[in-house]
Image (cartoon, rainbow, N blue to C red; front, side, top):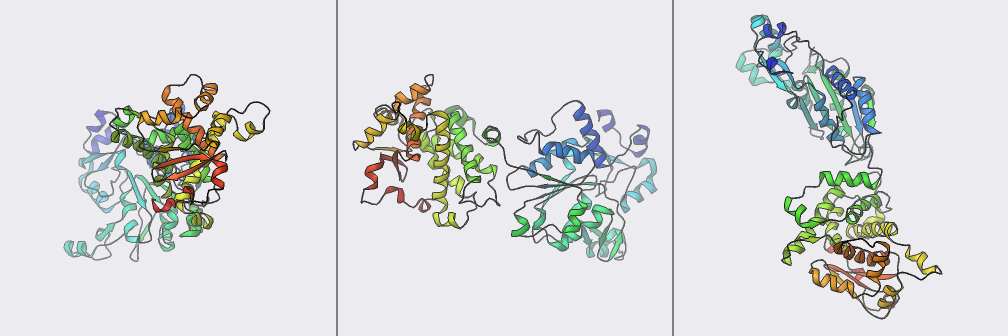
Length: 501
């Protein structure tokens, strides 16, 4: 589209320019073909679907199909639908004053037909940007046929002195008003069955029926539906005839690797410039956030049918940074780095985004969240350091021996989340052998990274039952595992995390 074409103001000028109308699906197809030939990426910001969802989506567009995106929550279904707008022509002409944005060369409404008939080549033309050709509706049980298709407007009939059989008394719903654009219905199974039935003719025969009279209205639409498999049993289902009319069903999925998940989180997390400049977040803590989601998706406490949204890791990472920022502000420091103890601040971001099964409800969401963090620590420890269990049984000297022996001598360590850097460093350096283990396996780290891994080892040893980790109101307490087994006092580990979250 050139600026010269945007200067066209009448139907006659449009005809002289050689403009040719094409359907929305033909637009999408032609622009996708051009994109593929140029090897351009058309779904910017969608990560991890390059070899799975995107090829299926492109195939459906080339086939000019209506599309159903089927997947669990937090799998970028709506994001994908919104990005389809970029495949539309930047501007298309329409008859000015038309509520359905009639194509000047192929009007469908009474207004469009009558205007072209009365004014001919002098019919005024406007231009609509592709961003205005996208309509999205969240399916809820209270949606009516009038909302989607339309209804007879008695006030309009009375004002214009028209009978109810006249097309001009119709107040069109969202779908007709989306003519020549993309119409998205999110969470389709939530739509009542009788409302789904009203979509049959639009998808197949392209006509609509309102209040008893049939109106031939050849709408030009690209339909995109999204659905969650969980909804098929919990709240509703897609009626079979409607599903049959949706030509392509594309399955979405969660990120397959921690690396992909991490890219998504870093792209989507909303951090302030101050947070980015003053809070250091090492790759370890970023991977820990992602590993929590992977552990959750495999946890026996969490309903797998419900899924674990990518929003969990995004919110968790934002909370992690904010928890470190809070400590920095309290202690009057100019900069800080994320510690493992900051993961206490992640728990509120987890508890609201997991659906627990019966066993999980017995444990409580707070405790389940902490279990997930612990499992993530245990998984990643093996990527950074030797397996504590194997090291204990091996003939070679145990690298963790000095650390465990120090706690066996009755020493304890408390790490609260607002501990100033000087005290944090002093507490960790007081444990013999702890820094040596980090330096042995990771000799080229900065001081902050070294301190982070020193704390990481303590949490890891606790997960491997080499140390005892108790929960404080605002941090953790480490002690000897053997002594804690015979401690008659109430274990701090028994604190009900759900009292806080």
